[in-house]
Length: 151
Image (cartoon, rainbow, N blue to C red; front, side, top):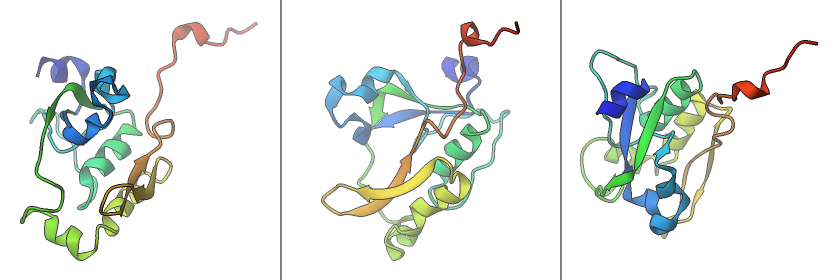
């Protein structure tokens, strides 16, 4: 919670079990922080933001607002283990199952077409999923030492 306050982030999430494919020797765990923000959200009520869209709204929000310089993070050193996707009733499960998950990833493309594409997810149940190009998604902060000097 202190990090949420000191970072100026709109939301900080906890990593998901799927983020740890490759184990603790994988790149994601070693990052410490990732720019994405999904499924768990620590937010401040006095620092409101609006969710982008009705499907895949977590991805649409962190890519759309992230492109405008807003901060969203996932802390990678702890994780949640949630129920298998689209296996529990309620929420958006019925909508996602009815459309076969087809509309879901494309809604994020609408909000951030420069950074979000769709790709086949290589799982036992093949489905399309969003794919983020982080070099096109969020602004980069360049070290002052690279500033052009007028001659």
